[in-house]
Image 1 (cartoon, each protein chain N blue to C red):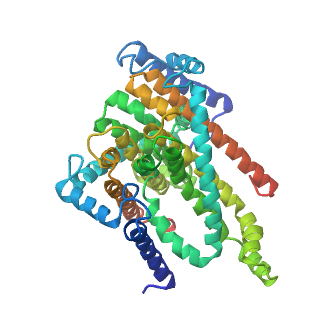
Image 2: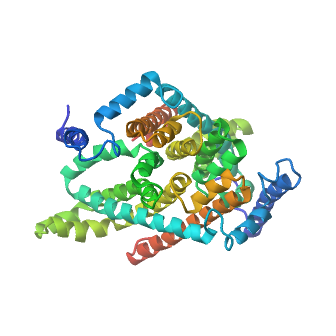
Image 3: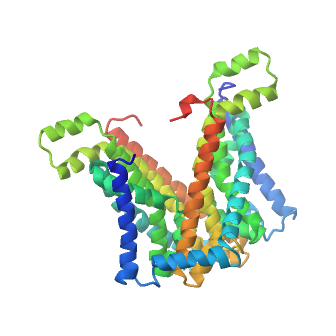
Length: 258
Length: 262
């Protein structure tokens, strides 16, 4: 059942939509060249969904961007998590690698975009590089912190039972550190989307950021709004998906459930 | 967790080794020509480019001038976000109805990456100061609002009960009970906002600006001037770090003054 809170929220969203209609369509307070009316939005949406815009249908652009985020994310996990685990395991590795991180970390992922384009051009590789960068640092730091937070007796017990090293890592250390690792991934997912959209705005040939870029150049407010909504929906959907994966993977971790 | 901490000397040695390895690899890669020098200048090239940029202009201004125009926009955007986000968050923490009205709208907007506002920013403001300010605002606003709201919402109930028993009105309740009690949370939010705002600034300047460090980097990219791109990255990293250190100091000072543990 919807409580009082739910009704107020529904009313609020409805009022906002009504306000949108009133200022753009009914009164013309905001000119259609500045912000699209609901009808403009709908027309742009149906145009890109069926006939396509900026060289492809909405599904193509969205799929392309989604694929890049997932790829960059997987590469970041595959490289960042082992490095973080290693740094957590070995004090020497920590001492040697930390200073490098101190230098690189303050540079925001977005600031790597011009360099990525110089090195790799306007194609997918440059985007994967910047997404990798956005997600790599949080995965390293959180895996590292995850290993450091493991209770000593757990490791000692495993050692006492003669667990070989690789099983110790894959069956004790990595699972015990995984709640922290997932925290890092959640933080970096939004960063990955921001970085991808920025990279596609700066230079791309396909993707949601490219749609936004073309719509900006064509002065096409309806399509700009379609692009923005798509970015929001994709960000929301991937966050939900990651949450599901996390709950599935950490089903054993009762404390992690809220 | 595992081995005991290293002694300070040993830690220093490993740290030096790590840095030397990193810088050495970078130098070797650029010197021996595996990667063309045009695309990977040596660390020394970048350093000398930074020194050079302090006096000779690139893309219409010297590096300090670009930094000054970036910082000005940044200050406007972050101050605007704090000026709207913190009061709104406090009000939402006190008036339940306002909370129910704003929260669904806010949640809907939150998933749109700040950078996706770029086309509208360009449409509304051109490449002037308004466009980047809007994007910085979009990046810095959510943590200001969320932390003020949480801070106000989780005030010790007894404080509120005592105050309302004494007949405190809404305005005094917000200014004299909620605001002081929420200050630690607000300050933490401002620090996050400052970091996100700095990120958004860089993104905004890459696309909608005619001055600033981000603009300089994009121009350098178009001219394949890799040392200038890297000089821009260094400037962004250093200034971002300084802002963070400054705010950390401020936060620690505030906590000490209030008798909290730093």
